[in-house]
Image (cartoon, rainbow, N blue to C red; front, side, top):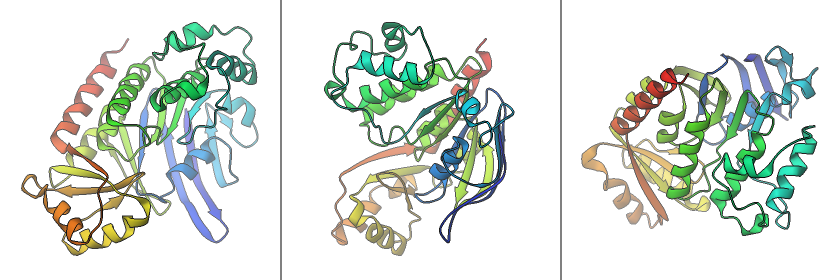
Length: 303
């Protein structure tokens, strides 16, 4: 379905994607995992034909550069940053994007009901919560029932409740043979939605494993997700590294692997460095592995 063959892309002298090759079969679900700046979003934009690159990418045999229009008709895309006009009506947004896709007959009520937004069609976009806007973006991405769904860190700005609801919706929609490629920095999302994980760092693929193998490889047993303001993240990285931890950046803060007996230690390190933590979550590797196993079993039994 998606074939990425020796793709490289530069911004000036900076290499964003470095000789990446990846084959995604129809019905597969692949997560791109890596720190900020690893090249995940750039690779996704290459797949969409939005950036110039070396190498080749095809979607169901359509070259994304020479046959871009045909290739993009096969894809539903939800970006991290949404671009809706706040004064646009929800039903109007459905109709507008349907016309852009060349679809003549789209029932906005059915479209919104499909993503849990029944009854909200008469509202303005500005009246929707963040989670509802993401559902609207997903509804628009699914117009025309594309066989490929591409998502770029779509839950990064949602709270825990909104994130859980959105991931559950994606899990339900990922069946029926639809192919999914998504970037994420959350272990629970990867465990729930992915069959395979492609680890990217500095533009290169470092490892490709099954989702179950990926989450099981979290050697310390748990991961703290610390929400830290952007100006303080590099200082937090240094302080935690000096304290013996191995933090990594993600969309809204840091991921810190810890042992069950060390969960409080990163908080003490950052408190001593006078670095504020806005919020935090704990994801256990065992729980993530269970999620992956259950999600895989459900996908295998989907007719």
